[in-house]
Image (cartoon, rainbow, N blue to C red; front, side, top):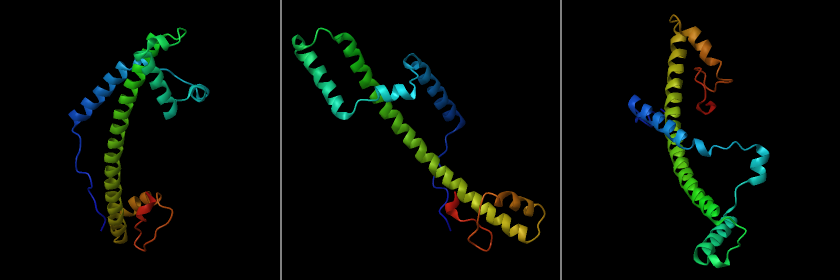
Length: 162
């Protein structure tokens, strides 16, 4: 017997509404930084790797601690703004990535629960269709299209066909 109901925690309608409203607020707050980069732009500008981040950090440190050694050709106010924005975005991205991972994990458990319950219902349908109960043969025919093969003689599809 499969383990079912791995996640019995469900958001209320009010919690879902609050989350959606919060996402809308976040989207509006970040609207001013929305930039559409083409695939070519993304390739051209890319993101700096860890070594280059360390390089940027060191240049920033030198500018803050020994500004007389900094190139006058660089707009250091803009450099500082870019640096601060980069740090802020990295922090937000890390938090959002963590949130997305947690949502995906919870969804995975609900998906599993739904699939296991659907398999149970399909097995019941196959049983009832075998007893010639009205409506079950049609239901079974509609459901069995989702499975290319069955591994058991009772018509229950294999669990790994999700």
